[in-house]
Image (cartoon, rainbow, N blue to C red; front, side, top):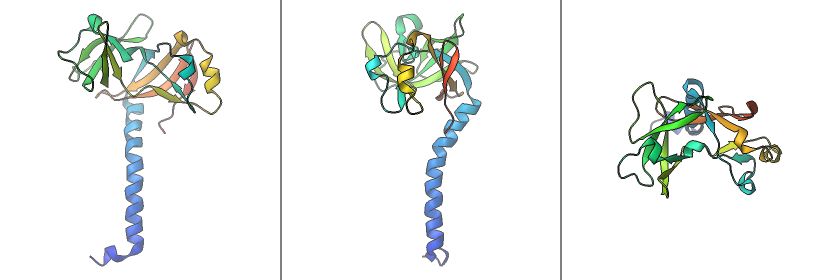
Amino acid sequence: MSTALRSPWLRWGLAALIQLLLVALPLADRLSVHYSGAEVTLALRPVDPRDLLRGDYVILNPAIGEVDVSVVGSPENLQAGDRVWTVVEPDADGIYRAVDLLRTPPAAGRIALNGTVRRIAAGNRVLIDYGLDAFFVPEGRGREIEQIDSSTMRLVVAVSADGRSAPLRLLADGKVLLQDSAF
């Protein structure tokens, strides 16, 4: 062992630096999505109110989490666990809806969320997980949010060019209920 690595201060310092890097890398990834991603507003599907509050977060169910392949089309032989890109475009109200489902990233200029197929459901529906199913809230605010009509709720997310997404704001009737920080 070299003389420099025999110093306990240097070894502890290296161990601390490695731990800080392990914490900082996911935060840096999230920050890059927050600050460089395109803002997209998604509709939320109603969620069983008994499951809406679990601890200090609200369970979300983005409408694009259930894609009707008879409307948008589907890649051949799609199975649970497959990676997919859901291309979204705004409707007349500015809500982004699924317009295409792809196995590979779309052409530049199209906004697409990268997700994993959870399962293929009856009725030509593909259930997809984008990692947008929970929004952390301050303690005690969950019950208040639970009482709001979910049909008026929207989730604003940042979507990076490679399809990564992160929640930014939870809206109800166009007003900000909660805002997520990158941390």
